[in-house]
Length: 208
Image (cartoon, rainbow, N blue to C red; front, side, top):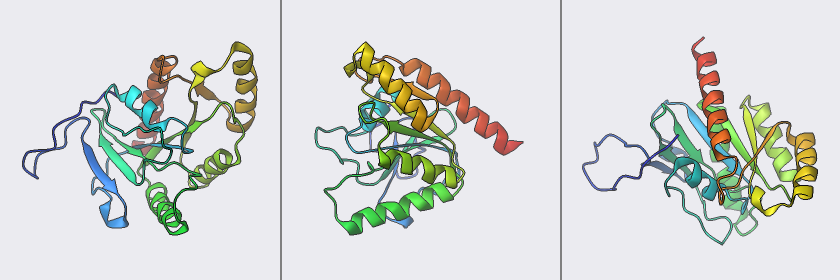
């Protein structure tokens, strides 16, 4: 899943390279025309989604900030593994207007109902393992037939006792969960392997 960031210059017809921002979707007309499979990343604001995405890709392609909610559209990135990555706005972010939240919901519906998303990586906060917004998101994806992979972020911040408790609660709410730390790299390789396996499994199923 590694990518590399390319310069933004060059002719408009240049083929998208690994790590390129393919599309910044703020309205329906912005969705990329490609029908390639999509790996989506979703999660609450301030759960560390952009930081984890950068760590997984090996380069800084997604913007990070101390201020939650910096991802304000659906951003599509190119990969060299036959699919595109979609980075969605953080769910549960309160500092936006009702109109903007409704617009995001409409874009998410178009994305997930379109059949291109082969897997949604759902990021959860281990300190709030059974957050209602995370459970609702998982249910939303299941209702649309989108396979999910739950990931607990910022695992390095938990003590051994806290990890044990969080694992139990996370499994109750989300089933199998992959704990990771974008800061230390803990769990990153295992997550990469699982994403590759699941994406290939879904692709084989769609071609079968």
